[in-house]
Image 1 (tube, rainbow, N blue to C red):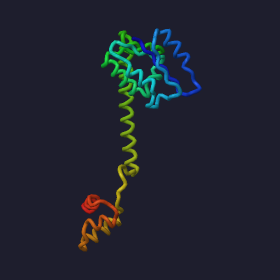
Image 2 (image 1 turned 60 degrees about the horizontal axis):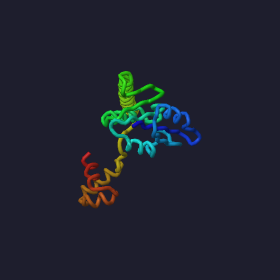
Image 3 (image 1 turned 90 degrees about the vertical axis):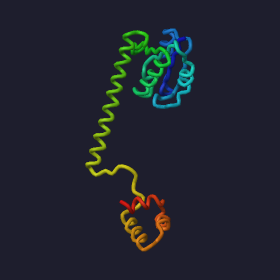
Image 4 (image 1 turned 180 degrees about the horizontal axis):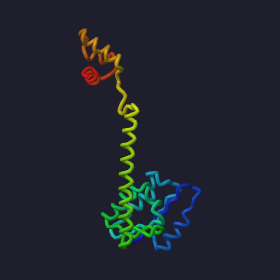
Length: 182
């Protein structure tokens, strides 16, 4: 069975062009989300479509960007289709997982997505290192100031119970122990 999926990003847009292309591709069942950006995770028609698909079925979209929120999202979804025995076609990009050319195109998209993930990771690491060199502190802000730690140490040395000191500073006993041992 062939299923089509169409989506518009805003209420002002129409799915007419997509629907015409999906009907021309002989999709008897078409799921349609209107006024939903690809970034949203709540696409009810797509969710119904994905639940409907069975091994041997084909999902047809007018364009790849109508289906996925991001390249990695698309790859995850299409890998799931392959694992479930579901065929996929994108009419505009001429991707058809049933043809050697379509499978090759899909593999190239996967390679580009992997490259994109690697570049993002590399840029993130470089940004973190640059921020650290500028003195940016990462992680959670300490619960106790250096002055509070000195005061807590004085109280403990004078014989106050650690639980009392922790309560006084409005922190847990473990937080106090860590601060005193640092």
